[in-house]
Length: 364
Image (cartoon, rainbow, N blue to C red):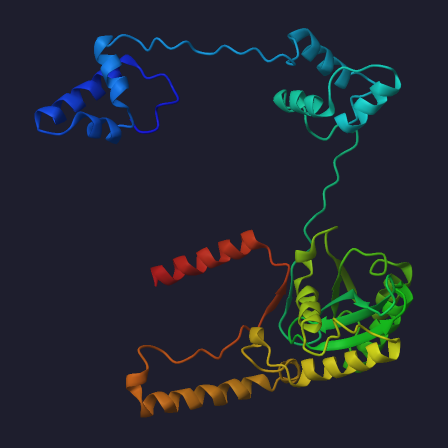
């Protein structure tokens, strides 16, 4: 019964409440306490008993919405929205055009509401709605198979002026294989950096996939021509979907949260910015113990030195467990890391694969 003060209570419920309170009173309980437990007042109970179970006599409020459209006005909105001049336009464009003609039928929100109620709030153009296909998934089983790159702003001491940081990284090893800083963002700078990175890493034609965002520099003709010349397969994110390029996003976050990043002083010159970036790349590749790699450096992973390091760490833990078994309730720390790095994995296929593996394991 609790919380029913604001609504009309039926005859059956009222009768049940009266019976419950009477039983409690016969057992020695106070009537006002029983009423409180049911969310009633003692005065309400007394009134119900006097009315001998009749319907609640409170008058219900019948309010008429003053600005509600009549059925005729509503139909006129629908006819107008589906007429030849407006059938391919959304309400945000229909309403201004009607105003230009000196006609007002309803507000923009009312147009949207009526079309939504009629299940007509869909793509209204005669052409097909734009659909952006999720980028293909690529797997890297070794270094220099899948790279990811992006451009980020570097703040300068001049307000509104920025330098542009170009980073290319290997998603398998997380190593920064190429970087540069320029005063502008262009496809030409990106093409030159890509060519130099492929030369440094001795990349062969048709060996590499390069993933990038959907920006102008990424899809510029100069950059695409360079990729074709190098034999590199391009891959692009969907428009405005940063999750399609997670490796580069994570790299820029690490760079800008490094203690050496000058958030307060900012960069005074491009020479200063390049000096900072050079030191950062050296630290990231050769000193940074990457958590996703079970705390080996990107360079160690890139060169294949990480397996020996993990085997040595595991041996240390196994020896420690043999010497002090009471300190372990289960297995020792797992230093293994997956040998496959996946870019834009298909979650549905991944879940299905894991389900198949689980079923096989249970059957075995």
